[in-house]
Image (cartoon, rainbow, N blue to C red; front, side, top):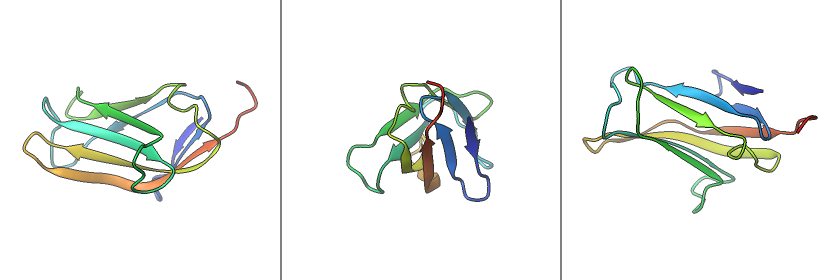
Length: 109
């Protein structure tokens, strides 16, 4: 199970589940040389995040962020996440977050 609450940007996932989500900008087409960075940490400004995924290949001007079972094998609890876009021309934009990232327990593993 993977849910994104569009009102609060809260992401909820069952521990060890897989998921993916698409990142696109209204006013910019992502292309070679750009980077999308998805980061999950216990606290804002934590030096070493729990999870960080960097996407540098794009489909139709957007990025697919893919979470594996290893990525979501985090302790059950609440984290913070953000999505940052670094463009080839030097712009740095945090487009989501910091927002809640909840890992919940499951029955089947």
